[in-house]
Image (cartoon, rainbow, N blue to C red):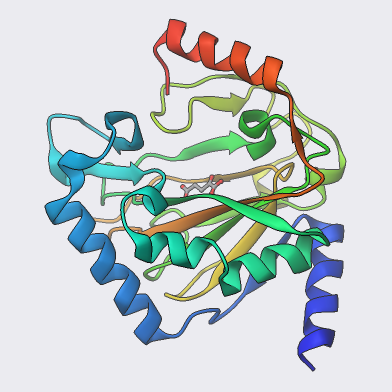
Length: 250
Ligand SMILES: O=C(O)CCC(=O)C(=O)O
């Protein structure tokens, strides 16, 4: 049964570029994750490297929108990234050994949480082959109103699209010709509950709307795994990081 489920998940992942796994974690596990995040945010934010912490507006701490590399700041997060059920699932979908690279926290504060521009993660990763994936774990109810994740089915098989600079901190690059080959109707989106898991290939085009609600946040965790065959184009990556520094985007 377990093996069959994994085979059909891998088939969908290969075909569509994403999969949806409802109730990957139970409510007790989600409560523990939320408590750990709260602890980090309330008591240890100052210890984090500034370029791992993003706000919608730096002058207002309540607008915290993203934290990177959680695994470096609390062994709890290191343990759910590496040697975990998440890692095993990454290996099933990539079809090879995988290494957890980072865990990120994503929030979209109500009213001001901005959209995540359309992008392909491998534009940032620069891997060849692009054997990598991102997991998105819902920590609360997410729907069209507060910015659910939207995918373009099959886009992972159609190459890298041109990307250009955005004004969105944490997501500095966006597909510059988005909309020319696809429309909003082509986007597949998922309403998620706490514990539901979405997983997409590093070449899959995805985006989210902003959080339009008056009083709901939109909290999630992101996990990134690289397959062992994926090699980083180090020269390209260095040049890109130099470009980012020079243009002061993150
Ligand atoms: O949650 C979000 O807004 C963005 C998620 C995303 O783009 C990603 O996980 O790659």
